[in-house]
Every structure is written in C-alpha cells, then in structure tokens.
Length: 120
Length: 112
Image 1 (cartoon, chains in turn yellow, red):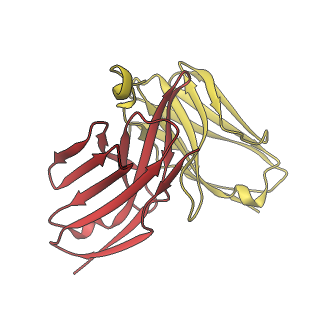
Image 2 (image 1 turned 135 degrees about the vertical axis):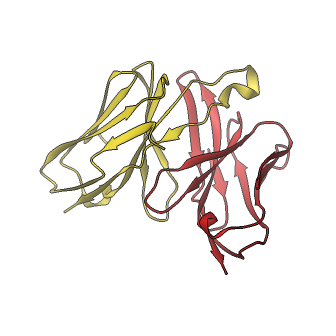
C-alpha cells in the first residue's frame, strides 16, 4: 500500500543523536497516528492527531516529540533515546469515524511500512 | 483497562481452513478490526465488525459476539501467501478520535 509513506525505512542512531521520522499520507484523511511495535508485544499507540491537533499522548516519554504541520504530514522527533526504544515505528492515517453510536469507529487505519529504529 | 488475547502461533495446511480467535475485555467498544501483517510490511485492513454475527469477504470471514467479548477470523482455502501475523484490535471512539488497542498478533504458518 503506497497511501502512507514513511522515511527512512531504517535508522541506526546513538543515544545522544537527534533524528526525525517522517510520515506522509496521500489518502485525504484527517487523522494521523504514531505506533510503536516491539518484538513479542502488541502495537502500542503513541500519539493521535485529528485535523493536525494532538488529541492523544499515550504517556510517551518526552524524548519523543511529535509534530503535525498539516493533515498530510506527521513527524516524530527523537533525542537522547534509550536502547529499549529500538523498535519498528509505524505511522497510520484514517478518516474519523462515521455513523452514530457503536458504528462511529468504522473507518480503518491505513499504515505505512514503518521505520526500523536501532539505538546503539 | 484494555486486555486483548489471541494465540501466539498457529500452523495449518495449504487448502485447509483455519480459525484465529480473539477475546477482549475493554472499557469501551466501538468495533473490532482484523489486520494482516507480513514480515517487514505494514499491517493491512482485513475486516471490521461492530454488530454480532458473521461478515464474509471472499476467503476471509470475521465473527463477533459482543456479549462474550469474542471474535474470530476464518481463513478458507489457505494459500502459502496467507502466512503472516494476524492482528485483532478493538476501537474506542473518544473525544480525541478513534483509538485502536491491539492484541499481540497470531503468527500463522501455512505449510504444504
């Protein structure tokens, strides 16, 4: 699926470095998300942006700093990371749900291929 | 709190049928998604259930029982390319948007 593009695909960095992950969606969606995927663990939601406003910070350490300049672009700025932060970072986008009540969550999230991050 | 359980691994034979179960206990519920994820690739959407019953989509079907907190994904006529991880996720709609909580995924291996 090419609707959500993430760069870089792979990143190796030292604990004192500063780097940024980039995500771009071409689907006309109004919500974007960052997830962390570690081995043997569920996908963990990190941040949610609706109409480029942050609406969720899932107790993420401040060494991860998101930025959403518009509804098509999402960044994750990284600084002074720890070895346990090594993981696959996935970006996703969606339309906000339609329908009333129970059906309000019916819009699927579309994922990018992720950035494989390794902290030395 | 949110708790979603699914088996870690399953093995099945090409051409057979396999059922992957998911149980959930969540503080809010606005539907359940199934995603497929091949190694090194993005999760891709398979199905969405919000009402009880079976949703059929080609070789894949998904079932939901809200009273039991239970869902399953049924894969028929298995093909080698179906070897992947299958992720169960519950969605909760909040003032801030749609929040997905995932299970750890079921790694399916299809053998000859």
